[in-house]
Image (tube, rainbow, N blue to C red; front, side, top):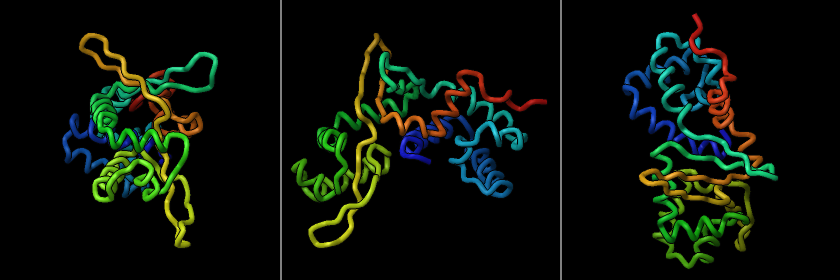
Length: 214
């Protein structure tokens, strides 16, 4: 999975857990591993390819396709550019984004690493964050996929340290009565290489093969 897929997968998995019995999820995981050597996360990269072989989970996979992936996000082109907004429709991911950017320290980290990747020690220094709380918040951002490793840098001690960069370049929040619409701008090359975005787009556009053909 690329960095955007890592970012999206956690929220997709949470949505699945809210919709489908955990035993059914484990059954799908086991079947994928035994018959195809795939992890559960690979299902979304090869959704159309594997779903027909998992016929005993037809209702569960149809629910994932129709109720979760189809209504997870949409891609909105920006006029005059090659860039695209990801319009987040999933409530869990929307709340996670809003909660993360509402944290001043996390927002400062994300702003700093938007254009330039930095090591964690340097991020904490530039953001004027204490080591204990700074590392804790960095770990949260890494676990949730908001920052991603993009390479290595050599420290003053001659050691190698991981460089981290924010995955979100811009964010728009639109409040329409009781609805909150969140748009995020991800680097175009990252969006283009995302298997999950490709799968969702194909499902929405009806380009994927018919589900569970008789």
